[in-house]
Image (cartoon, rainbow, N blue to C red):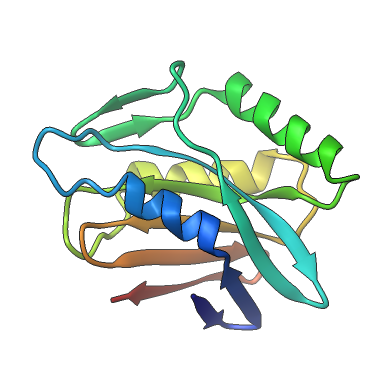
Length: 151
């Protein structure tokens, strides 16, 4: 899947899309899931190559997901080291139990906080929310944000 959002050309690799499908909340018994978005910038194109899966330290319920900071950092450090610094943190993903998701105030505050306080290797961050039918995607940068619903 490839999405053009403002000046960003984002390519989602098959492995990342498989994770999104695997954790879609298509049953009422399934909790929200999420993790960090990992990938590479190649010739100006954002390549989303991996999505970290939820860890036992994350907190989740039907309508909430809280990523555990330290377990995510371990995953990021591992991927960065084993790719010789090529695989980097690109943002955050999680699921919502609605067909076409929209971010909550908590979601927006979280991604803005990540953008403001983290040491980033990019000039942007991605927020991806997977619904039962569609995907919400937001790119946050110094210029503001751009968003799209993918059906």
